[in-house]
Image (cartoon, rainbow, N blue to C red):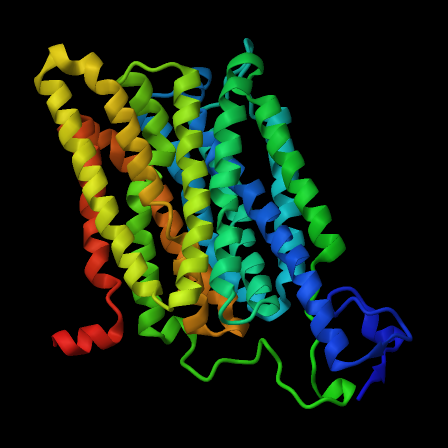
Length: 446
């Protein structure tokens, strides 16, 4: 059976059929199959744009510290408030996404983030005549996080709507490659840009990337066409309400969210202070530091795509998450012990530095490989129509880590040096292991 679409059916945000076009179930299926990759591309672009901001700015930490005249404690505060802004806004943005739809929220969030970064490029940059205070910089980065928190839930809900179970893990993992992609590009470009030209072009470039992503979303992000009663075909809405409990009342959603947050503590330690660690402790230059951070982000991208496809085929998302937690704990524990050895044996310090850099990269990849799998599990438990709320909750835990870790690391450095930082990271990854146990295994062990 087919139907003809009227002008009223072709408004932005509904679907992309042209007036007078006959719809058949096969035509709808073909359109979905083709257009979903554009939607996925929009999700990648949007997340990469914001990732370049929240991971790229910390990659400039050495120049941020010197340019704005910050102590290590102040540096941790301003970077932490960037994460706090996202943590506070993720869940409200997710709830709004489930109520308003992904298109509107993503356009508002990307546009507002771009405008704010552009204002920072003009007014919140150090110069010979004026250096913004710590409070001003911290407040500006807090607002950046509040606005950018719109990206995750809205783009994730769009993917859940356009892709079916059995392929969502792969699609979500591709979307999550945007985080290391954006972070890697930020780590590659922004430190050199900041060292040569200052922070005005840093903020300006980040604003431009958000504008480009917003244009992509405006052009191609719409609700998927449905095979249902409107066109006279029996079927079900792919984003129908889940029959399970609401995400905020679902214990398993909370467990996955807490596990995600714990695994992010060591990951954030790498993203925010690895550049300072390699500079201060290992004595490495900008080129080596940037290359190491890019290697972490590139390895994370590859592993996220592979893990999404692998867990879609084998249905083993929880076991994979637990494996990542164990490997990450082992990697950071080994890194902490190697740092202790370098401190205890000063003569071996130069020889151990390459091994420390390699181990940091390996541990960073391990603790960054699981995001797409975890977010797919979280969204699946909530149901596609409520994925915005679930993903917002997940990223609230993620950015609690982005807030707490940069503030905690300077204190850990005073108490236990860099070895204490990496051993604490190992402990967080290890604690996540029992929390991520599937419910059937918990019942058997009980």
